[in-house]
Each structure stands twice: as C-alpha cells, then as structure tokens.
Image (cartoon, rainbow, N blue to C red; front, side, top):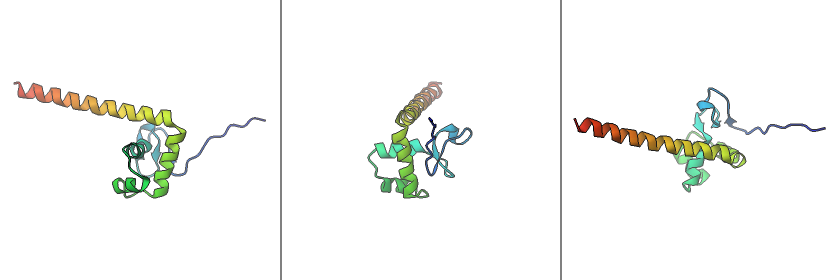
Length: 102
C-alpha cells in the first residue's frame, strides 16, 4: 500500500497570503531565502542571528534544512529577487537621468 507523505518543517510556513506564498519562518515574516542568502554569503547560522536577532538557532537551521530539501525552489526565488533588484536600480538610474536632463 503506497502512502504519500508531506514533509513538515518545524518553524517553516508556506501558504498563500503569507510572505507572498514563499517559504518563511512562521510568525516572523522572514523568508527562507533571506536566511539562505546569508548562508551563501558565508555566514554561519550563529552569524545569521546577528542580522535576525529575533530568530532562534533552531529557526535558522530549519530554514537551511528546507533549502536543502527544496533547493530548486529557493534558488529560483533568489534569482528572481536578484533580477528585481537589478531592474529597480536600472529604473532608478533611468528616472534620475530623465529628471536631471530637464
């Protein structure tokens, strides 16, 4: 008899209407991809607490566990966020150029 199992992650919430439907640490509105970004920048879980002092070490580790089990999902989110930041900077520069050329 085959059964389907849904992995549950302590501390992690992923539901429509909460953080844009992206995986986040419950009751904090800190997305998993925020913690992963710090991790990819070389920060240890303990150092991540300096950026997010309201988190517990368990919450940081839960975010990293979710990432390693859903790497494609989180990597896509990180790429989208990077693209959005680049678009914002480009549009900001274009707007500034328009205003100063008048």
